[in-house]
Amino acid sequence: MVDITEMTNWGVDLIDVRKTYGRSIHALRGVNIQVGRGEIFGLLGPNGAGKSTLVKIMMTVVRPTHALGTILGRPIGHHGKLARTGYLPENHRFPGYLTGNQVLHHFAALAHVPGAVRKKNAGRLLDRLGMTKWADTRVSKYSKGMLQRLGIAQALMNAPELVVLDEPTDGLDPMGRRDVRELLVELKESGTTVFLNSHLLSELEMVCDRVSILIDGLVARQGRLADLTDQTVEYRISYTGNAAAVRGKLVALGATVDEGEAILAGCEADKVNHAIDLIRAAGLMIDSVIPKRVSLEDILAEALADRSGSADAAPVARPVSP
Ligand SMILES: Nc1ncnc2c1ncn2[C@@H]1O[C@H](COP(=O)(O)OP(=O)(O)OP(=O)(O)O)[C@@H](O)[C@H]1O
Ligand SMILES: [Mg+2]
Image (cartoon, rainbow, N blue to C red; front, side, top):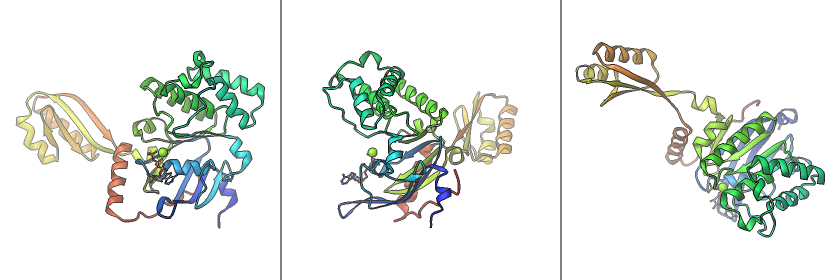
């Protein structure tokens, strides 16, 4: 039995979402995902993992085989809450004969945004996405990156409480990506909940509060990004000089010694200090000591390795509160 009072604490609370296409394509096999209000959440996973299927179910574009849970505290598909949600679909297509400005008005009108608000928001968003000078150009003339910027503006026209973005930085150049990351942080700061799909791990790492790794339709890892990545895996000590005299002692400490650097796995500070002492005592100059932290890529690689080793992963437990 699901506790209704607890459900409303989450911006997104998906419980046991399943989708089978046809008879045999099990795109989602019992997904539980929770996103706190005002968080930036990243759903990552390899191609075909089921990420887009999940957001399509959230947006009622695809009918689930089974789904429980809430969006903005109301059951999935609640009309009032859908109107308070913005959505950037994967591979979106806009009618080529419309201008950028007309596209924004058209989709906002479908979401019942009043005319005066549409006008104000369209101007503000076109400006924010760097599209003002293309506002009256037909979409058929837009580049891929321009279409993506327009798509993001479109998703924000109703000043949503929740915005769901399927690969928002797809087709954008590095500056465009950075701009979108800054925009996501601005949205969060204004209280908007951001749910995004991406396979660009380093991008997610820069902005997300919480992430889930989806593999073969199941959540393989889930948690606060800080908790998942808060671990130092190795220290890299760089030095100038010939380490021949001290190599044996460093290797005995467990270090891998290459030309100009010693790498110590694990995060035992006393070992790192000892290695630094040894290097300095041998008359070498320390250039840098760099801790390498666990990255999302490491976590994804580990999750993929686990999945290939077992036929079925256990469902990930549902956290108690945001
Ligand atoms: N309309 C459909 N009919 C049949 N199978 C589908 C349909 N849409 C998706 N699938 C299948 O469901 C699975 C999940 O697809 P989905 O598009 O959700 O993955 P994804 O994680 O978004 O992948 P990508 O990173 O490539 O965008 C895949 O095996 C895909 O082939
Ligand atoms: Mg997808």
